Length: 131
Picture 1: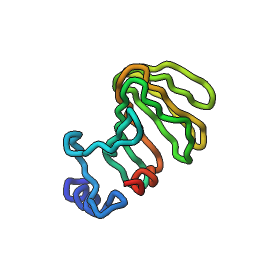
Picture 2: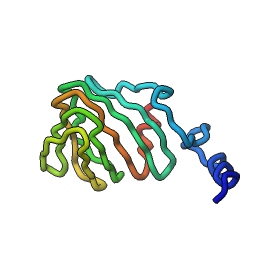
Picture 3: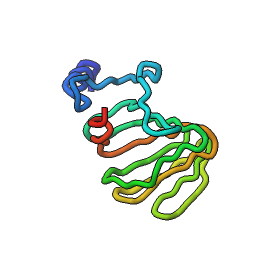
Picture 4: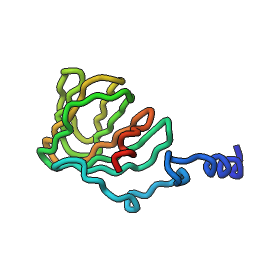
């Protein structure tokens, strides 16, 4: 695929809004959304099949137990978290990751302030509707 074809494809895609999908995403250009006490997020990029979200936690912040129909992979960018997936708990730190199958109960407690990078498939419609 040449540059012209790539540009044409990108111009025809959208992020479930009126915005055209961006190829390059700069962290500094995306505002934080307060999610809960000690937790905020940035929706970095998405289309209907995939979403990337940056979630920042203060020490003691809690990602309450929940489940959803999306597959999820999370990378621990920084900090230390006690992660629970399907009743199993594990302490994970910078560089670690975890996988959450669809409809599996999961959550996290931040033990040391940090950032999680979440990838969802398909995209989290509820995150966009919450705006």
